[in-house]
Image (cartoon, rainbow over all chains, first blue to last red):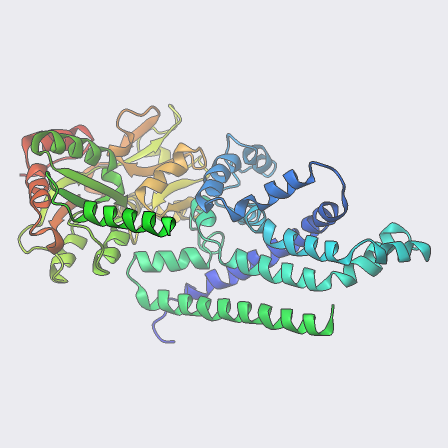
Amino acid sequence: MLGLPPDIWQPVRLTVELAAITTLVLLVLGTPLAWWLARSRAWWKEAVAAVVAMPLVLPPTVLGFYLLVALGPNGVGGPIAGLWGARTLAFTFEGLVIGSVLYSMPFVVQPVRNAFEAMGDRPLEVAATLRASPLRAFWTVAVPMALPGFLTAAVLGFAHTVGEFGVVLMIGGSIPGETKVLSVAIYDYVETAQWREANILAGGMVVFALTVVLAMTLLGKRMARVGV
Amino acid sequence: MKLLRTFTAVIGLAAGLASAPALAAETNVAVAANFTEAAKEIATAFKDRTGHTAVLSFGSTGQFYNQIRQDAPFQVFLAADDDRPTQVVKDELGVDGSVFTYAVGKLVLWSKDVGAVKGEDTLKVGTFQKISIANPTAAPYGAAAVETMKALGLYEMLAPKIVQGNSIAQAFQFIETGNAEVGFVALSQIVGKAGSSWNVPQDLYEPIRQDAVLLKKGAGNEAATAFMDFLKSAEARAVIEKYGYAVVD
């Protein structure tokens, strides 16, 4: 690869970091939420589910616009950033994580919720008769049974964060090594007519996307066959 | 069947409307983001004078250039620089001899905070955390901002504080939302806005000559050629100057 700018791989590394951290945060936050959505009988739970699902419908520019305001000095981001002497959470890696978590939330919560719902009450009731505490039943029965759902959630959450563009463009400020992720780097290369570099990154994304979709399909089939 | 008939009727109607000869002509104009406000006012005046409609699209010059190369349906291109219009002609997508400088852009350092910007000292002291500029490789105002910082010998010091907007419009938006305290924007963007600013002296950066070009798609379009002429009129030039640009003869 002669003559390539040495910094062409930096956005790749940054994107993988962002997607990995976002997925981790989403699994931690999303699992209790999905559990509650699956098990609760509260009448307003579907309203919560709808809020979680909103990024599926909203243009990323809506989220980007509100985040830019919310992360800034006049929003909640300002005081938080003030804790370490900054003025805004925009233009930071942390800001991108917040944006990505909101943006990819439905892709993690939905599969996990579905998996918990598909399991039904029975396994937990059985666990209870065997004197398992609710917490123990959750870890030793519910989570293993919902594993395919978790796997789908992790893959989708990761992939969707990698594919994010509008939100990061609007709140990122395109800082190399901090907020200049793959999709933004590609946009910049295209914008400045560096089509060779754009082609390398964009081609890589096509391969990545194809691999993810194919893997998901095959995984789904295999799981259906073994009956989990 | 009823549904099908309705469907056919709607399609037929739409096709009829699209192919009907317009009374007044219409032209699609790609406008560099920094020229947005001036272009809107010029388009209104253009409509009043000629009856023609200029449909404006706003974006970055780099993106428009790519789109024009990919056969975008623009007939006139008002760029933010003098490279891209010349290049468009070289690519045989623009009409030879139609390129002219419609405006010369002025760079300012701007803050929403009334006391924040006090000449070049603001840059030297550098008490701000973020300074917003447009992408220097894609946007001429971004390049001019970098030139200015280098001319003052401050680029190395300020580089870690730079955030890049994709166009000058986004660079402005970062300051407007308070996420960056200061930034280099076009004078045209802050005309009539509160805050504090420093007009960067012309000797610190190359003049930002903004050229217009008639695209080949517009060569036979009455509205497109009329718009190019109108841009050179005294009326349009007055608007351009009002928005903080210089005009050349």
